[in-house]
Amino acid sequence: MGALRIESPNSADASFYIDDIDFQPISEAVEPDLTLTPIKDVYEGDFLIGNAISAEDLDGVRLEMLKLHFNVVTAGNAMKPDALVQKSIDNGFLVHGHTLAWHQQSPAWMNQTTNDSGETVPLDRETALTNLITHADTVVRHFTEKFGENIISWDVVNEAMNDNPPNPGDWQASLRRSPWFNAIGPDYLEEAFLAARAANPDVKLYYNDYNLDNQAKAEAV
Image (tube, rainbow, N blue to C red; front, side, top):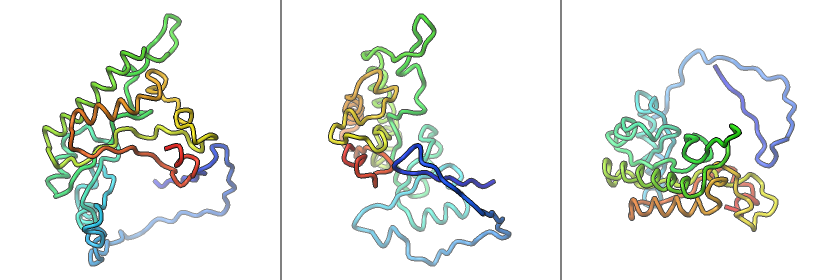
C-alpha cells in the first residue's frame, strides 16, 4: 500500500489540482549499492550523520545501509522500548533521544483535567509543571543510567512553534497553543530544558521543529 502526501509549508488552506497520476508496483526488490562512499566517512571530523529509525530498520538490508552511512540514530516514534535503544547500541550506533515534551502523545492526565461540566480544561499550572519536570527528569535519568554515554543528546521540546507566525519577533505569541502551553504557559519550554539539564549535566540538549525554511517560523524559533 502506497501513500501520496502533498502539503504547503506556508498555508494550511492551500489547494492543489493533481491530475494523471499512475502508481506501478516494483516487480523486483532494488538491491542497495554498498560500494558507495559512506556519508559518515565523508563528514568524519565535521559532524555525525544521523537517521530516524523504527524497529524494522535494525535487521537485514536496512541495517546494512544504516551501518554503512550513519553513526547515530534516533527513534522515530518509539523511544520508550529499551529493546530498540539497546539493539541500536549493540550495532555500534550512538543514540539521540526524542522527545520529552510535545503537543501530541502525552497522556491527557499530565496537562489536562475535566471540570464539573464534563469539559476538558487545562490542568492547574503547579500540577502540570510538576508532571512535566518529573517526566523529563525520570526519562533522561533512566536512559543515562542504563546506557550511559551512548545517549549523546535529547530533543527536549518538539514542534512548539506555530507555522508562519504573523509576528515572529514575539516568540511567545508565536507558540503553538498546546496542552503544555495552556496549562503552564510559555515558560514550559525553559522548565523542560532545566529539568533535562538537571537530570544529565553533560548530554547535549536540542529544540526540534520542521518547516524552518519558512523564515517567519525560523525567526520565531
